[in-house]
Amino acid sequence: MIFRLENLIPLPMLEIPVVESRVWEADSFRFEPGMSYLVEAPSGKGKTSLLSIMYGLRKDFRGELFINDSNSREINDRQWSEFRKKKLSFIFQGLELFDELSGMDNILLKNQVTQYRSQKQIMEMADKLDIEGFLDKKCGILSFGQRQRVAIIRALCQPFEFLFADECFSHIDEENGARAMELIRAECNRQNAGFILTSLGNMKYSLDETVNL
Image (cartoon, rainbow, N blue to C red; front, side):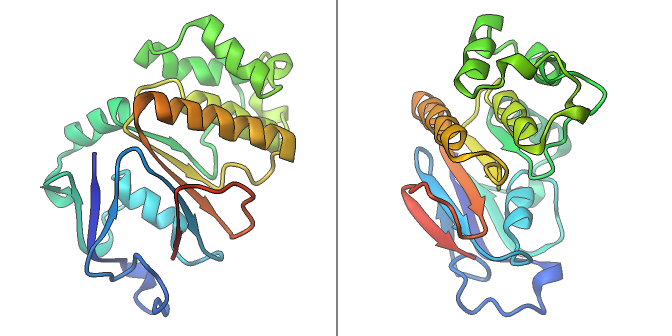
């Protein structure tokens, strides 16, 4: 799966200077499979907008987005649904977890649809991220960093050709952040998938390419 952006910019950003951006309004910019990208920018420069457009959640942009050779404006809702089930996974900045459900139940909601992971594999990921002792607790009482780790595990419970991660390390301590990055890298390598991580510019981990918005 290749993403190609041509002269693209979200409509709400038309009044914001983007002269140093490598992406917004560029003649052409590509995100390639098997590559990892660190997208850096201060708040308000469109990091979440970029991922939301590429995930099909936002259509309010000028220019064009091509997925492989298909114009995203011609991709219907059923096709987007299939992409999100089999080709695209997303760790949302807001996490999108159900507070009243346990961490494990939040993970299983996805895994029951995809049938991608065994219970043993889920617990192995939880152990690696030092969250296994908290999965039986409701997400509403977990710390934000614990919830981020739940969301990371959930995102890895499906096949994907690209993984989008929107500031998903912001509240995770350095040790667990390194473990989470190792887990993500291993899964992306195994699936030969692309990885796009957004950051405010304080990320400790180096990826294949850094992109300034």
